[in-house]
Image (tube, rainbow, N blue to C red; front, side, top):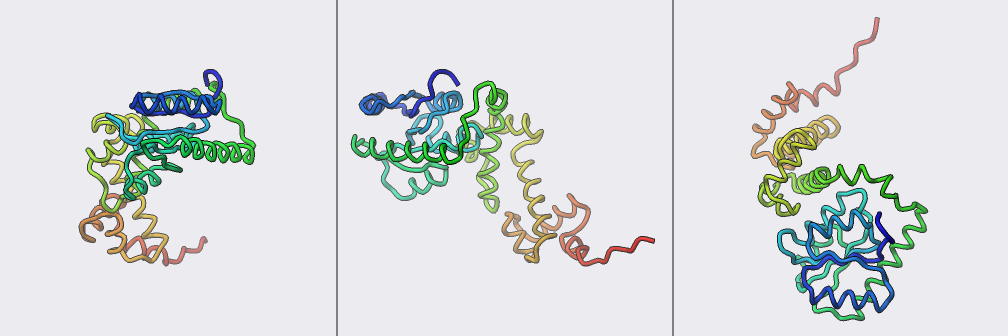
Length: 264
């Protein structure tokens, strides 16, 4: 980590909003850093490891939710609380923000009292968690390799979580790339580099891995497992399962009850 750890990292593409936030941080003698572009803001979070992040939702190229998903997929930044900054007031956007990993929202235009109150509360909570865990922040030397190796890994981890959460009806490659905050080619390249297979190649294997566990360890019907994992029909599921494991789901389940032959 370079320099003193900032209390707050501000990530917002609006100069007007940034100036107001910077003035408020200065008013309360809080150390802060600024990121005006989402990718740069993410990189600063990894490098500086602030105690708290204020993150604008509406930004070009990558929205705040995508940035937050990446932060939560990176072991270095996953525990940093994120407060979203937004002019939207609808419930769906707030629910999406909480699902992405945010802890709170601050509405635009800003009310200085609300900003300072929410920042103060979450900084206090963050400090309390650190004290209770009694875990020191790793040094740059200790975590440098993780940071350098994490670009593809974080992209992959973020996409994997989204796909697992929506495995019954996964997003298209274009939709998934947008949710992660990259383009389609960058997303597939990350999967190829980190896992040696494309996005939906991994998804096929993940579905079958989950299917094997569900068939072998539970009594859930094969048709229900098929539906839950997003197969169009039980017949297609059975074929994919047999092609992968050389045995049908029914045959695998029947093998559980076969007695083990006694040794001579």
